[in-house]
Image (cartoon, rainbow, N blue to C red; front, side, top):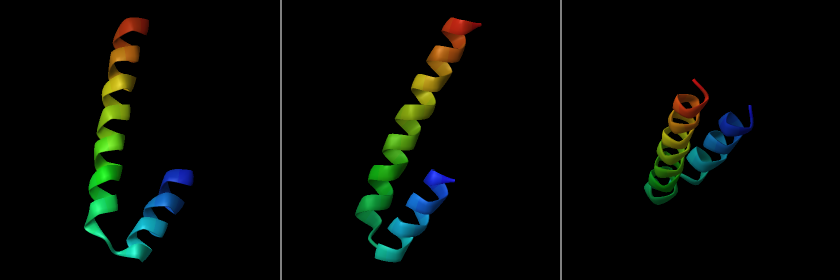
Length: 41
């Protein structure tokens, strides 16, 4: 929900720079999530 609202806000700005930063942050978060899941499993 929060991420959806954040994406909508960024799309409102319409600047590709913030979208690229968001994609990088999401990719890093997913990588950390996968590492944590690997450690938990």
